[in-house]
Image (cartoon, rainbow, N blue to C red):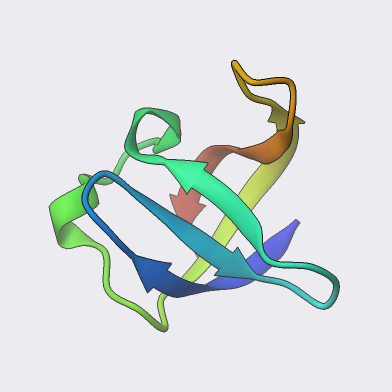
Amino acid sequence: MQGTIKVLKEGFGFIKTDGNDVFFHANNLQWVDFDDLSEGNEVNFEIGEGKNGKKQAMNVTLS
């Protein structure tokens, strides 16, 4: 899937998609450091299940 980083907080954020916003955690980033991300970056990701059983973005990479 593709989306745009909408919000960044300490170690997590939300990705804006055509549907709902999707949560992501810094541990789910691939080939990019969390500190190198900015709101508005285009990203690619997969949907997976987090530790709490809710859907979240996994394998997040910059587009």
